[in-house]
Amino acid sequence: MLCRVAFFTLLVLSLVQEDSCYSCADKSRVSQKKRKILDLSDNVADEVNKVIHRKKYKKLLESVKEKLQDKICATKLDADTATFIRNKLQKIQRKLKKGAITNGGIISFLEDEPLEKIEEYFFKLFNRETHRNF
Image (cartoon, rainbow, N blue to C red; front, top):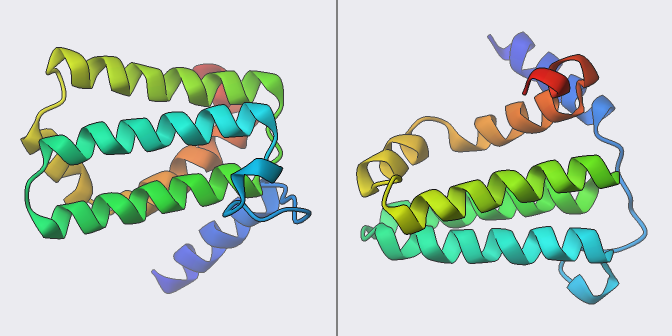
């Protein structure tokens, strides 16, 4: 199992091209397309935070948001990929506003290895064959 995790991690890291010329903590140095995605992810996290009430899940949510933003910051995004990620976040935002995403659904996600799901999401996103079907 440990070998699979190590292999998967190395595979993801090899697929994600990192841009080390800026720190994501300083959003003023981030490209406009990334800044829009980062701001949208902040808004979605804030909306999800309003739905959940337990401190344990709020901390998990913060970890998920940080992991997602780290991935966005460390990845060279072309216009199509940036649009795809932005559309996914907007879809989550719409579902939250409609009440289609519930407290139970959020907790279920947060309890089921959410950080690994972020890794898997970016792996699929940058695997061009699955990107078309994703």
